Image (cartoon, rainbow, N blue to C red):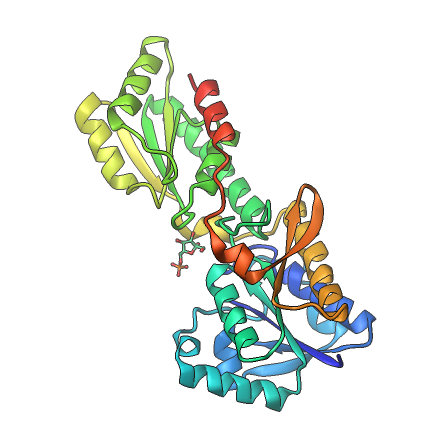
Length: 319
Ligand code: F6P
């Protein structure tokens, strides 16, 4: 192996820059050349790439977003787009590709593998919805962003004795909602993985008022329900003063936490090691505090299990 490529794809995640830095520096350390593709698979299809040096990744470890830019590239899903990408791969002279992204990005990597080109993956998504890794790069920062927002909303919620419905991201998964809800002490957490009953949520709110609670926070994962609708229902059923905050892309921005930077650095280096050892078609993950690799097909085979014990704990503590 002489030259590898790297790209970030799908929704950006804080810590992707630290992962790019680790891939570039670890590869150069081992005498490899590195080509960075811009805008994810779009760069692969349209030939947007350049050689990366040690200095190309200087001063980025603490920055959110991705210096390689990212995109969701529909062209690559078409056979014609993939053929063009394989042509660009040949032109760039890379022997393998490191893909940093979520499940859609890994499906793209699998398509390259199927066409006979070696690829490895680094899980990078705030949703933390990829199986076979306890954490994906960006999740910890997003959870911290959401928890910080809960703290702030709590101040004004108390002053006005209000109910706040806060909607968080996560696509079809409730991992961000659970982690931020537990860390932020939310009264109820609504996630797609666990059926919920709004009457129960309202009863819980009313019990809280009876024992003197000045405010309540209901955390709603976007995949479970619309925060606006939940707030409307609560207002109608309880007549409590209710407001909504949709955190949106605020969760995805900002400086990555130390945890995300360390995770990204370890996984970036491990991805290069994996390629150097002759392995590909795999994702590097973090399981029980250790870096472990698993095949793309295993990682994508099923939905990541939801930590129901943590969910129960959050419910008990918010009694
Ligand atoms: O997958 C990351 C994520 O932020 C999801 O949580 C969210 O549903 C989606 O991306 C938003 O996508 P976009 O940035 O394209 O609006």
